[in-house]
Length: 240
Image 1 (tube, helix red, strand yellow):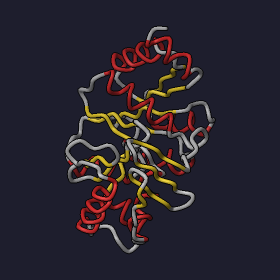
Image 2: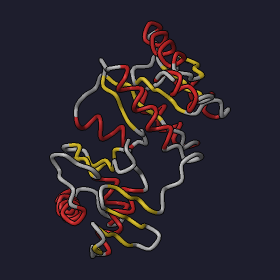
Image 3: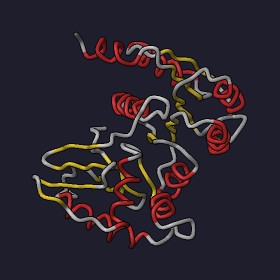
């Protein structure tokens, strides 16, 4: 079985909505996605995108920020107000502040233009695996001698129990529950420490460092926690 046939077998009938007012890009993306078994539709404006999401006619949205009728960020916020379906943003904005704003507004991921089609396809596959209706967070994660049992709140490395503080365990649970998703500093701080936090990134550096040490995870070649400099962290233990 070819790679394309393998993808089609597992992903049909995933429905992808492309929101972009540039016809050439829409056509190119549609061709690539249909060749891999996706059911693709396209719209040119934000209002049309919101209607499609409200009608529950899509499984994932590729959202360009440069739309004629609405700001892409506003479209994202309106989608998030009614649905948790995956949204990947296509953007020419590459500043750290722009990326953080997108993620905090609810984007699952982003791809900076110009982008590699294979990279985008990989992001789509990962986002669809995380779709709330389809994905169940594993109770036990096993990788390279590390066993993380979230149900029993137990971690072992090569058969030896690893003691975790309550804060380390809370951070681990939040990361593992959002496997593959880029989690901003602000999101992690609010989830673990509470709504009054958001700027104490030094807390995260300390606790992520402790988790890495206990999981024997190398920041230079991570098996579990990937650092996105200046933005946040991504848990990759499920292989995204």
